[in-house]
Length: 465
Ligand SMILES: Cc1ncc(COP(=O)(O)O)c(C=O)c1O
Image 1 (cartoon, rainbow, N blue to C red):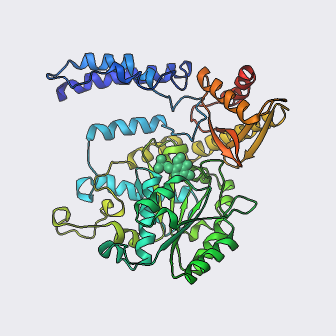
Image 2 (cartoon, protein in one colour):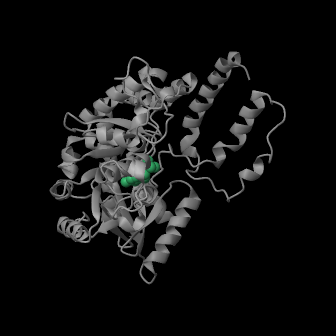
Image 3 (cartoon, helix red, strand yellow):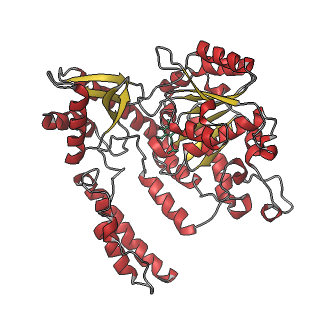
């Protein structure tokens, strides 16, 4: 294919995109597909000679969309959303066309400087104090990994980078069991080790218990271990649990520990001032991550990390070989030094498009609607004696069980979930709460309406046995 043909095919792809979104609601959210079924449609080896692009596009249209789970479907209530606002899709098409690699300021000046401005727009939008700067990673996992590496290095006076961690006393990281597995992955990969991630017991509000945290840090110090940092969560993945940020950060500060707040999903809600009570004290955190690619609509991947002082993270992750130096302009920001990979995408453009196209009013309105509709749906289940609402959280996520008389509730709930997902009109997932198998409902698709949300109850009633 030649560059000269690109315009023609991009017009075709625009038509396809238009049709895709028009048809989307009629498709099952998740395809009825067995593992391996799609793979069997692909040849085992690459073609020796090039094929006409028309054939490739036709094959795409025939086999790929039907084998995809449709994350932009208005009835996708599984996991958390991964919203792609229309303005974001458009921005990404421009980014794709330019095909830049934004590792250094000089390899993409607009990408670097727009990233700085977008992080600051978001800082203001989320109501964070002045002074936070930040960067955009691919995922929250990367941001949390960077924060844990920074905790390690701060605790070791930056000697771990050169001397390694063998021979140092055990480093300790603290979190609650409600934090995401990305924290576990980060301690494993950082060489700190899973056994040194201490899951602090919860209080009755499902926050890390501050007294238990203090006791654990003191016990670790008494053993000769090195407490290195605390990872807090706002809107945990399973049921949306949150730590009491002010109280936990205060304990961390007593011991001069680095703090990282994982608000991957619920961080977006903070564009609405009424939700900021749930992360009161966050301005004292060293690092905060939230995924604009979850609820806000700047599509995957777009994970924003705010840093009260980027220096320790840059000192941990930054390397400047001669071939990456910016000659005669060393004061520029090179965002690869703030993260793990060298290569970087131009992620700020979609934030620029989305925030301008929707405005904060539009984004706040979407989030407020989602939260209100989730509450209404949860209430509907709570009023039905065959159902029990198990958890509610302030941000539009609740869990329920199907508990018909005379049946095991775990089994009945699992059967109902399977029936819902085979049916395809909506898509839900599960979690465990105190050993109970529950269905999660996470309301967040950009295109969903109140009717889409309430249809979950209707579908359950139709499919319950
Ligand atoms: C609270 C929380 N933290 C971290 C993650 C990991 O996100 P990512 O896929 O961006 O690494 C998730 C994913 O859903 C999450 O819910």
